[in-house]
Image (cartoon, rainbow, N blue to C red):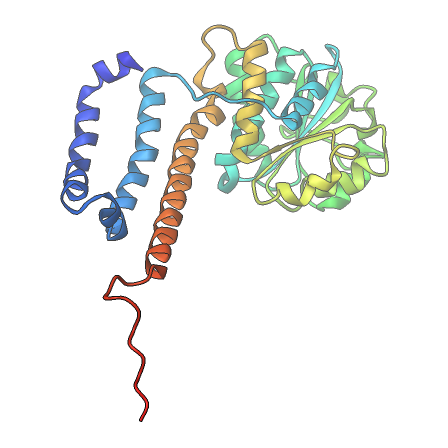
Length: 333
């Protein structure tokens, strides 16, 4: 932190300069009166700085804010980490670019973890744009950092099939009924890693990255519930996570919720497989939690200050006025 303040002194100077008028206001009017009559534009400015400063700090130093993984994130990590090299896993990417900000860090971390464990990765999608999400992740993780993994032998992109939850119901019994070719048009029987694979029940684990319908809820209902031996973990958006928490831990063995869950899972993956200088693309969740943390702390502080002002004014209003004593009684006739 000291080196950052010394090297980036001009940022600190701009920050202080923007707050000088506010400090002068407090000095002249008093802290309580200054807060009571504070222009809301100052709050907007503080919120802007609470987002900009962490982004700039993380971008310049490469350091991220501390993150303590939750029990759910650790359970998600353990479900993959317990698998042996060569075990087959199904990864269903059921999201689109609109949810990429929340879900892509999870998808990237999932694929890195599977690649480190040398698992056989079978990619698919229930959303039309899902195959492109798969390909983007494969390009930036497998092809970039794991060139020893061979398409068709270590991973395959089966592509998108329409039908929503009906697709899940079919492939849990006969995957070849729907998937006759992969996303490249190669016949299933010509793909080495598809030999002997007839249904999803043969997968050691299903990993679902979901932005809504169809997604994790449908995988629970038609994949994990009818077949208890099928293990399912998922990463979801923040608005979807509360809807699937009731399925944890029986039908859903692990769950990552929004960017917070992604950051916790990234922490576990990087601590185990990241090395001394991990690639920034594997830290996206951790990097994005910095601005959220500072902004949330500012909001909490503002709520506390507002409540203190409210109760202080309320208490002052109840105090009896200081006059000449008790009011005089009206004289009778």
